[in-house]
Image (tube, rainbow, N blue to C red):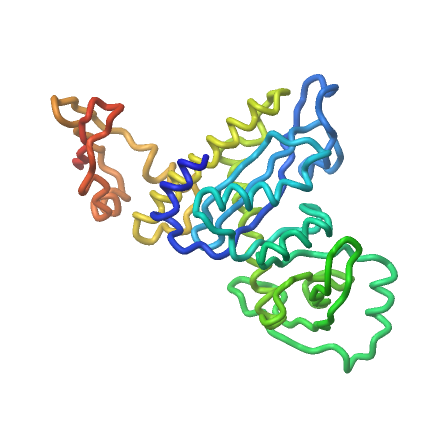
Length: 322
């Protein structure tokens, strides 16, 4: 995984700033005795499953970390394991991390703060906190506009304050927000005191990309069909999912107008194409049949400046079109 990300980072995310993090339980449909039970969103109930953890780079929308070798007992330490992984790849800590309230506990948040890593997360809404916020006068709430594309709820109200949490050393910034489509206020926590509340909320909204990325993995890479009871087997398959996602994100970056296309869309329009392969002494010639999207492939010139491929006998690949 480290070797893959180290080679991929200069190509797809040379200056990464933020990462979205999330857990995803993969259901197991056999004998459940050796597995923990986790909540399965698609089934609406808890069931035997293998817990996986993913990290997605925000700008490129590329999965860059996965770990399925987890149990319920050690899941709270997974965020710091990702930090150590990224430090081993780049030599520095990630700058920003975005995650929900279930990823880490408050002592882990304190460790992040001590490592000078900025984060935005969600605090669980206790009844006492909600009652206190609802009792505040209307004049205490400020207004802002979240004008991200395709967003339904743009007008918000917020209250910003500094609070203390059990297990977290020092004060932490809390932004209570209404108008996000929920009945009760959403509580954002961050250790960055200089960003405006609006900017913090916009940063966290980008975390939805990892949920979309995991949805793509379930839909296209058939992630929820990894039916092994052995966590190490699922861990290997999760790593292959990260590699497959990176390959499709690289292809999307080379095709004009398809930078944000999902792997399923790229596969249907470009990969699933008939043609003829001719093997010569020094190269492979791939002649693609006629398709409406071939001009985009021709424009991308995917075989330009290509190095010989060791596992193809040091041959190169050349693309031609009918």
